[in-house]
Image (cartoon, rainbow, N blue to C red):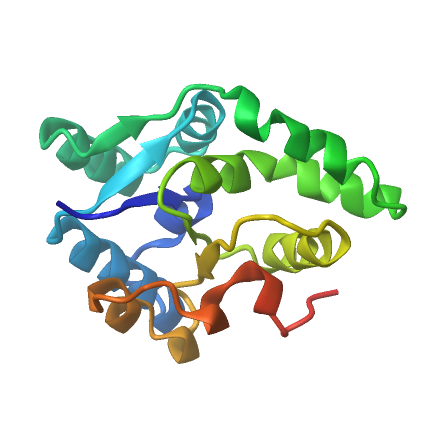
Length: 175
């Protein structure tokens, strides 16, 4: 059956055979295509994907669309209060940064709680959010460009809810 992942547009635009890092991302996407997993797509995420579209993005989307592996995620009231909670953070610059990528977290919470993104700055901001706002669902965040995260191994394992992958446990502070 497979799980539903929220894949940030930066993942697809970075996948290529050009460098070791972009090759890791491309390898992750190739493995993903050969699983039964699906992707979750909100209106905002779909716009982001197509605003930054590459040939790789178009190919990936087309494959998953044809295999009916794209789950449309409608805007939903149950996560709207997350944006209100963000505004309670005192660091207004961080608030703006969090809101820029809030659609990823909202979509992940509504589905299987997995975000795939290369944006460690956003992950750091969400870590701060989690530490300010108690009671949020644990969401796993994987960066397939980082070798030490072993993204392919994680994707293929049965138990993916590894606390070391939870946003709240992210320890590599990015400035």
